[in-house]
Length: 429
Picture (cartoon, helix red, strand yellow):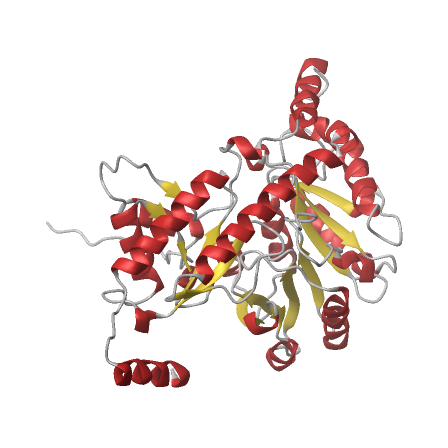
């Protein structure tokens, strides 16, 4: 006798595509048996490359923590007090006021920090403002918290500044926060103090929390100096998300933080700090061992180590910008000044058999064994995100393969009237 299936009352959670998801799709399209090898320009993990090794001070600190046998047990939910205090002291060097250890909450990397903050802020009917292009994990976490996402644009013609008029138009009485990323991932920009002040004033006027993602803090090599958004905390409260992953080149160590830059105590009075503390009691902790190493890492890491990393990235960013500028079908509207990636615009009218950015990435992998991230995954169609945090020689090889790909797929118009037609179409596209 045929039995009916039970109705279990479970609806599958809608899933947002992440960078890791799409990189796996691209990898399945890679050219087989390419003797040249695969060049990965699609993610921001520099740690496999010899030019991007962490400082010996970090390795020694981790070994010292291990040998001490003091860090084999469970840590407090918000993190070891010595590690929290060390991070607070480290961040305070760039601020006009002092943070205490109570202002810092340790997380298992910056992705975990995003999870904590978005979960704590979520409430029925609320919305949150994210930049476009942006980091897809924010959308994925918001979806799991049933937060409505609204996107404001970053403006390439203005060095990827925030479209503050767009922010004003998007926000309403259900808006809980806006996220800014500085230095910019994926755009490679660094905000000026003037623009940061405009952002903070806009958040204050709208009455929304300002979340500043500073995972790439101090990874700068252009004309703009890195300044933390927390310097404006006396005007409007700022929640800063950071980690050791990028600056110390140790993403696998999974040590991040949430820092409350709020000298007036607004976040404490509103209950946000208590909510963060409560959530940390029921979520994962960063490993006690890495927490134990944090004070020594922060104390003994040298400026020379950070300068070497920034200089390598500067040379790679320059090479990337120069090469892309020579490829007619591609353009990079803003020379990277920080972080580890940049955004490149595609002109599909100048390419044969390439429909859009996704098609470009899949065919580039298949024909040239180069992995690059389509901008559509980051919210910007017909753009590409290129990570230049690889070995310089590898980057040069990858850029030449991209050049060869674009040349092979280039439209060739010998008739001048047809060239004029293409320009006309482009101007009105």
